[in-house]
Image (cartoon, rainbow, N blue to C red; front, side, top):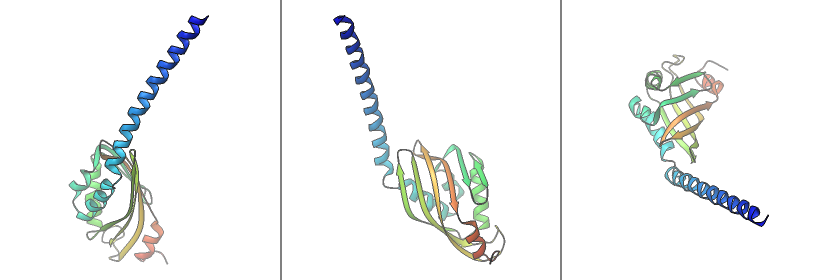
Length: 165
């Protein structure tokens, strides 16, 4: 009986040690990831890329299989579609400016609060300026954005360009 209990105790101890080693390794990976992203580098690059009006610079921040969604206007782009999506936006708002106001990145997830402004030349073709607060929620993989979802108030946008009272 003692021998069986001892074997069970040793087995449990080995499993627990293995689990602790795995948890420790995972914690080191997450900690390294957080150190790399805690400074908000990726979020700031996101804002700078959109402000640059360079679709290639935007695409370079994303994985090849990325999923990008603009919730207010139900627009979606995946992988290779992202470059065309960015180019169309730059044509629609040729003077777009994206200013980061807050960036949070931790363990493969993050958010960017930003203000985007410009002139509506091609969305509703009003020729009027706008400035909106927005937020992007994103996931990362390998130092790039693998999923990005944008949220902002479309009604405020439409009021600013003269389509709503």
